[in-house]
Length: 130
Ligand code: MN
Image (cartoon, rainbow, N blue to C red; front, side, top):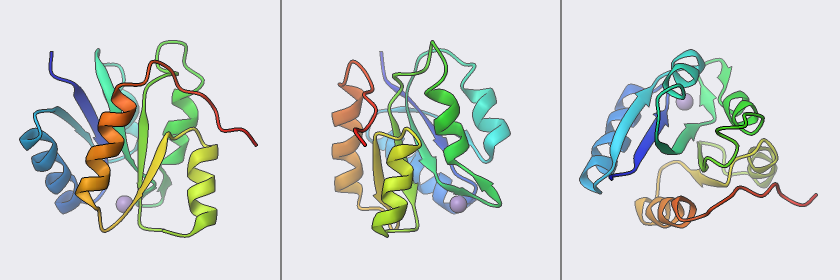
C-alpha cells in the first residue's frame, strides 16, 4: 500500500508544490488548508505522516501536533513541521509541541525526503528529553 501523507498548509502554491512533489515520489496525498480541515482529514484511515505548516494564517499549526500526541490512535503518527522560521527557538518550540522533525522554508526537498523516509519507518514516537 502506498503511504498517505496529509499536508496541512494555508498557502495554496506551497500546498500544490508539496502535493505534486509527494505524488511524484509515489505518495498518496491529502490536503488541508487550516486546522479545521486538518482535524477532519485525520478522521480518515491509514494516514502515514503529516507535513505541518506551523503558521496557518492566524492559526498555530502546532495545536494540531499537540492534539495528535494526546490521541490513542494517532499518538505515534510522524509529524514533520514546515516552518518559515529557521531560528533555534522556533525549532525547539516545534519539537516540544510533538513534531518529529522541522524543515525550514524554502524547502530543501532532499532533506524533506530523508525526514519522510526516516520517520515513516519508525514504529513509535518518543517525546524529546527536556
Ligand atoms: Mn503558512
